[in-house]
Length: 307
Image (cartoon, rainbow, N blue to C red; front, side, top):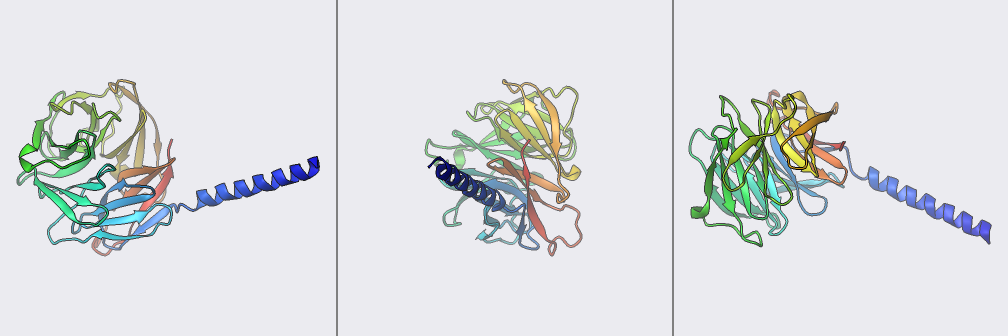
């Protein structure tokens, strides 16, 4: 009987290991996007769903990490741009930064319907990225030292346009020529925002009520070309687009300091801009800035393991 039980146990273990291996292999390392898509922002949704915006016409693609399949959720419009994205699980709403239009858009991910649009800034602005907390959605402006705050109700309800706030970035914040505020993240309780200044390679923790910024001490290190951010516990992943590198930063418990402890790269990186996560993996979307004929080029998403 013992021999039979042992054999049965080994057989069950083999089946389990095979199942685990099949599960791990079921997530493709490369997920293709439509030719000419010109992606920039990516965010995870419910389950294995993800969303990617388009710089070409503002369209939004909905896909599945497990299968690598997907399709257009929000059709594009002439003159529209979608840059950074953030997803609110409470409402199922997708928040989109509108780039040079100075606008923010909100879509229902169940239908693809646009449910709101907010005029945040005028000409000469670039509304770049967004993060949703329990209290509000916050947008960066790469050309002006200001964050935009859209207060949300407890269930994720949207505000009236008159309730939108502009928070001047103050304190340690330094504004220079070119791109400044880019990627934005928030601590789990939403009490602290983290913003990267791309041109200077500096990370800031920002008060979500006042806009007061404090430089995060990286011990002399910089993260120039910093684009999308992703905070996982006390580990901050910083996408450095032109360097084809994700910087790995371990932050202190109070987010006042950090140390660059590593970097993640991949031969398939082609100027990735932003990152999302699912399980123990990061997903980097290749924007391919500078590629000839971007309206016809191929684009994709690359899966890499976290550090």
